Length: 533
Image (cartoon, helix red, strand yellow):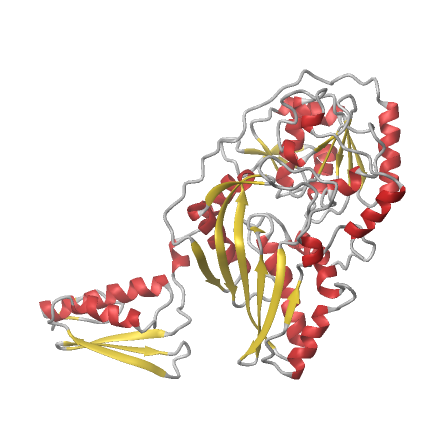
């Protein structure tokens, strides 16, 4: 039984306490919270308590708290979000108690704990200019340099963090009430203050074909650079439930060689190996305690009592080309309808309506390898895509092993691939600092070509990727006007080239071959033209 249904039953016994939003709470300052107002639950402006629920839905925690005992309740998915907790506290220094609970899947809670326990330092990679403060003991946790040192120390001195990450909700409720009762007359530790934010640029959209962007790489980390580059270059800015996003439609990413048992890690990842393992574990959690509305693991392994992964194995064992090896994570009777006690925002979005982003998995055996496709209705490609890809690769390898097949390609198709405004600049920086000309050189999966000149004829022969089979051959009289153009067009018509880099190279080589014929020079593929000896 889903948690939505269980909550409806619970409502008949004990009505849920209404939670005041900014619009319904005139006692909160007009301009507070400064950040992510629409993502936070506001309760009592006179309380000193901020409840941080990490990856646990804030609504699930807030509905268990005693009315009036806390000021604000929200989630903390990433370490970068720590910046906005600190900024909101400085804008409302009445908040002096942070109660942290929930699943810490990306160690954002651990980073916040280290901030209070160990402090921070100048980022050693900043050079002469301070780009950010670094939380001590965490190489991936940074604080905006625009927040002065003395105000960060004021927070560490005056704000207390209660770490209840492993506690039951009943313990969290008890602690919130205890702290509230003990600190009702607490005064702000400083005057409200705000600081400038890191410089931002508006997303600049380049013209594109609008739908279907294809990326093909061996490893998840390498592909992620192309994913970020695609969305930041071609993404259209639109309003979303959690702020503005830049998005493209139907982003298709093919991963060829990633081994989930030995994942290729990159310095520019916003997670490390430990955090990756934590995420994968949470990804496959069967949610047996019903602590969340849903988990991917629950939908895959125990959807209505059905283990869809087991059925996929049985089908592919029986007939490896079965077109019905499908896992469906979307439940029409549940996911198509919002809960009854919801608030509809002005832009038409619905609060407290949480449905899966991953909606379907499909398996198919080709040439002795299990290929898998994963369909996302939408995908946060900065915060979630690489983690999801690693998790899906692990699932794919497990299925392949059970049916006695090799590990083929993993294809993720994101109907909406998006980057939140919060992560836009960081995404661009990651691409700028790690992209290179060398990355443009890729093998074309459709094969390769050999170009020769037998005066006056230009010859092109195409071979299969492994070189074992000749696919086709073409030739043209090099003295003809626009010979290279016509030969290129014929090859493109026959769809023998799929990679843009290969197509660019083909055009260059044929242009050189045509020049060699017309000028009486010596042609050798991939080499400069020479005078004939």
